[in-house]
Image (tube, rainbow, N blue to C red; front, side, top):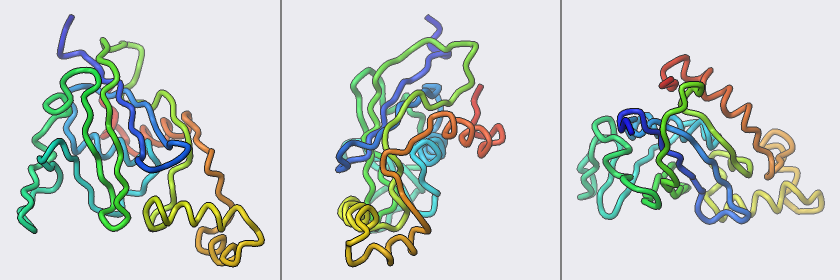
Length: 191
């Protein structure tokens, strides 16, 4: 098998959400963590408005830094295949250090490239992405309670803050893929 043309099937699950919010994504094994970050932002539904990093064991990958005694290696120089080597390998992707959205990034399978497919792409997923700045998992649970109950004391305020109705089950794989390729204008598309 030509190892240069291998594809990773990864499952990304947002920790602490019940039912779980997740996405299954197909990506070339040799993309950088920076490119993976961009793909995860689109696939999950985030707006890339906050800092992030990847973590594997005690090692951190993101924007290089030595702040706070934590050495962060440059994600532009690390490929996903450098960290996730075989099926069941897992790392953490944290987005928005204030809300601390932690995602498990699990390598499910390593597959041959399908020449009829355009990579990356989202295969499947479940659950809407929480709104930005909602306050992490606990804030999201409070948000869901308030927005879904017209009798909740904070319902009107939350609906106004969010800008309307919110369906926690909503996820459209075709829309995610269209946005993934439209947003990238070829930059995210690896082909």
